[in-house]
Image 1: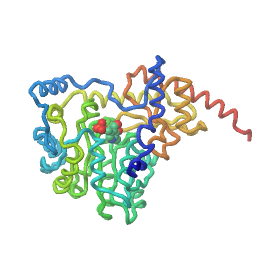
Image 2: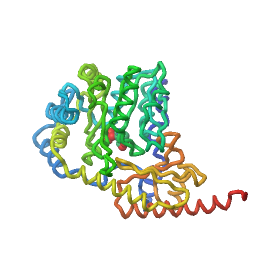
Image 3: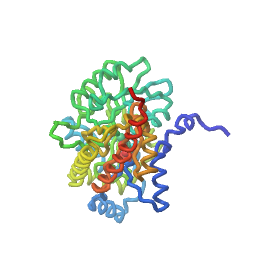
Image 4: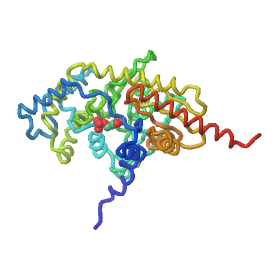
Length: 404
Ligand SMILES: Cc1ncc(COP(=O)(O)O)c(C=O)c1O
């Protein structure tokens, strides 16, 4: 029997990228101790108030069907959040409540692009993005992020990649995997390119709350908050990272009212609503400050510094300090092997699991991504082992170099 071409288009773009992680998990299941620096799962429990809010809603019988757009209580909380953030009146008709950023991205891309279209996508980018674009039938056009620019996507580079088929610019700031944060000027310049070519901007803002207080003035900036870009900007986000609640699958799409009302039937076709008891918990999360958000952000910032210090001066390694998020990128290419080969050896010889940069795009093939979501001692030990492997490789590499 035949299947639809979408399955061929996404083949190999799902969990295959997590090979090192899967192998690490297998080793752990066999009783081996592995330091897992692969995935970005917050290492703190969801705040007890949010667990209690969910339990209260469950006990109160909030277990029936919702409606396609989402529960009023959470839509109002979102409208208040984005009104405060943008300084514009943002209405409840600008949101659809969905299970997590990932499904928001899927829904938005399905609604905005199709076969024959091109999507401008940073290289490297979050591991699911290629699958998302491929699923629609559109083509992802990579725009390389330059380390010299702190991996911040440059409007000039985007402009050079535009063709008559370009429909959408796919942004992610703060950025996974590099931790780069677009400045307001960056966003405005990118917006100019989008306006000049009449493009949509899709902004994945799942790390909005995790911009480090580095004293370098880094601040979150979004095209949604720029009045002149609002009509062409759609946002995907969630509580997964901000409230240590990835398993709740609590997320949303935001955009201009006219577009969002046209998106609604597609969302209904796919989901027909999410869980009312999760919406109640999310409304509470969105309308109060939770100390855990700043604590996680400061933890990740401190751990990023720990990695930089631990690996400073190790020949062949270069740490790229992030401005936000829960990851650090590390260049290993000078050691004569790519990130994937390094990651496999690191797991086999040192029992440390990291993500090979190639999982995020070819320009990161000489890099590794380290997650900062493990306790400091484990991270420090992981760095010692990375340094040990780098030193072994470095001495072999030096010895093998032809004498000049
Ligand atoms: C950039 C980015 N977008 C989306 C997601 C998925 O978020 P959610 O749990 O809200 O689906 C992640 C998770 O790691 C991510 O890093």
